[in-house]
Image (cartoon, rainbow, N blue to C red):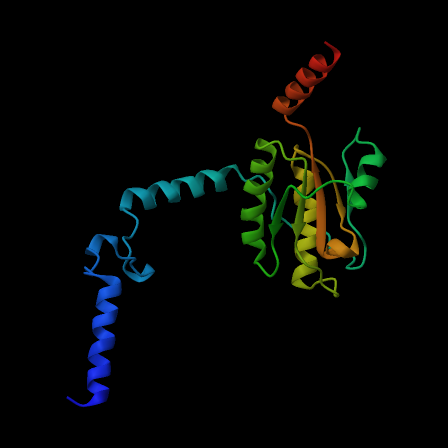
Length: 200
């Protein structure tokens, strides 16, 4: 037997000695590529479609005509009864980002569909300050500025929204908007309970 062949056989024997008896995994333990994974059942697809339709039916955000905002004007809104100090603190990053929604380069209809559950869920989870990243166009009728204009209209349609304001340059500037949500009844009750414990 020549030397290279003897070396190769020796290596194979050493390898077997190290790893012992190796058995192939049963088929059920193998990772399957996404292309051959089990597809959702008809019932699952129907449930998903129903949930999307239900959410869509509740989406009150108007897609009617909107006055376009000048592209270099910051956005600012506060509901009646909200102090200017809250808006100023929001404007200068005085609150932490509790959640973000990215709407960059998405069609307007998709942004409307995404914004509705985002605000509803943020409020349901007692979040107060969220950031929406939407981009900014340089022309009044650019897609990013059209979205910005609709966003200003849509946010004011939510009862949960107390205020919104364009972000600072370091947070996205006119291409991002801070939103302040009102406290939920549950959060108010929790605050009262904490204050009572402090006094007691």
